[in-house]
Image 1 (spheres, rainbow, N blue to C red):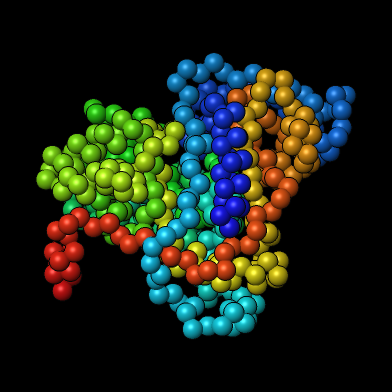
Image 2: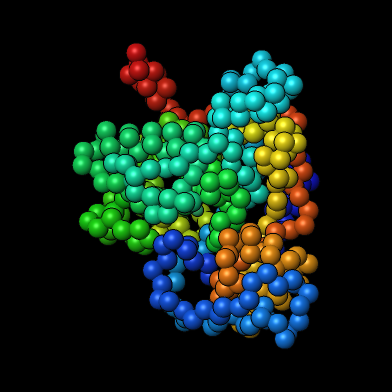
Length: 390
Ligand SMILES: [Zn+2]
């Protein structure tokens, strides 16, 4: 498992190094570029006389194009505590029988990992007082992810009156798997969501000292950390600094706050990944849905409910490249690339990413029961919170 994880990390690193700009499709405020349309379904082996060799259109020279999400790191192996789970006490045979006869009753399953994963029994985030989905078709998460997200936002609303709804970006596709331009967002555990702003709440607004609502953003981060099993919160470094300073200014425990950002040798929950000055990316651990997927995986594959989990690399389209050439370079079919990117036509654009399905399927999940880190409460918190709940 470790070797497999390392291998994935390596191919992602390689892919990232070739990456420059990636645009979020549902959101990027970007002038329309010229797109090259070419024929569908040509095999990779076809040569230059063929439609798939129509070169990529030249991208606009767009100076303030939003950053990409291509450098979200792979989740490291989890260490921590084992949590009680609904399938405890069921044998593997009983789990397999449940997959066969009552799949829906097993609840959401987060299969594989965020960069090579799938979603079973997902739930669609719906517009409510907490948020408005930007692209409902890719706002599917596990029940846990949505419960955690909603719970954290409800806390902000309860603490600070008149809190506005956020813009909710991508979570995952209905059955998970790749959604361009993301490498992650494949297993129902990743959420892109806007910051809270002073004044206009607009999706993909670049956050800064003038326009960020630090009180609400900090309340959101605090609720994520203390009330949910959050794994990472990706934010731009400039925004991290503002939040950290704000948290300490209102009397939060300095060592605890530092630790959340990786100080004192602690695992950083709030960390940098390119492209997150315009929105927050939250990744949750799903102690239920990940473990359900692990227990059910063999039966899911056997019954054809999920294909073996697939790995991808991201390829940045260069000037003059075609889908046919790219397919040939990676030894995959044009049809497979189109499937991976949900392309109806063979449109590709220069400086935009395409996901390439890699031939080797990821091995099955680990045989060991999953473990998850304990929540990181501030020093004075456990007693006070426990008392408040009585
Ligand atoms: Zn994201």
